[in-house]
Image 1: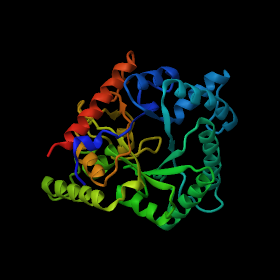
Image 2: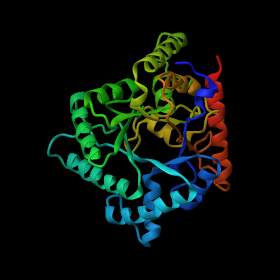
Image 3: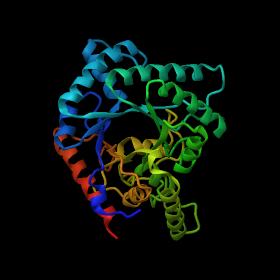
Length: 347
């Protein structure tokens, strides 16, 4: 498909609430900064809802205190309406699929799903993001993963809700776009599509935070890596129908100053997961991933849906960002969005 700047004019813009400030910053201030920069929608981050609910009720609200979360969600809906923001997606739902039958983990996954659906109903959101599982204890086949997602899709369909499945590049079962696309095809439900992400794709297929070069080194040469990566992007652009891409998340990554330990940390998180948590700036602000190439491949499918900034920027060393001026940060993100589309349109 032709990539002309005019064809991008109708692309709606979104910003994840977890990508500005911290969960302790007031949600109304975050929303004001997002709207003030010209974004049209938000991804509502569950940590932000938890913090808002705790302040709303004057007590600690837990992850599964769904009555308290839903009552607070009514006010979140009103805050978003006041700012003219659409709640595009609730995120990040995780470690849902692949558990063995009758285990506590599987029962808990479906219990959580019911609670999140209640929140979606209350807050006025029709899309749930699910990240591909990163649990080390899920031995499931693609058929089992697809069966679990099919059940979740049917639960969501009762409310006319959709499921956006995202590959997390540190996932144990579906770290790449090909794997989640294969699973979504096996699910075969009209309300299941993809949440693609520039970081997850480039960070999994091109970059490696555990090497000194910052790129994957277990290939014959850098040219081989480049060829494989661009062949993958070409395949993506030709093989995925645009209607099965629900949202594209945008972020870059800093190259770690020192290679990350290749082993899981004490909390069980793999190096790409640690990299993701605090070293993801907006594009054109110190990162090194081929973000433009990924965005171009996605747009070649014909997709013109939500572009969403989901960044976790702790600066080049991963320390805490200075959040004294959240509006300045979201405005920088909007400028980055515009430049990204301009660069994609270049021959």
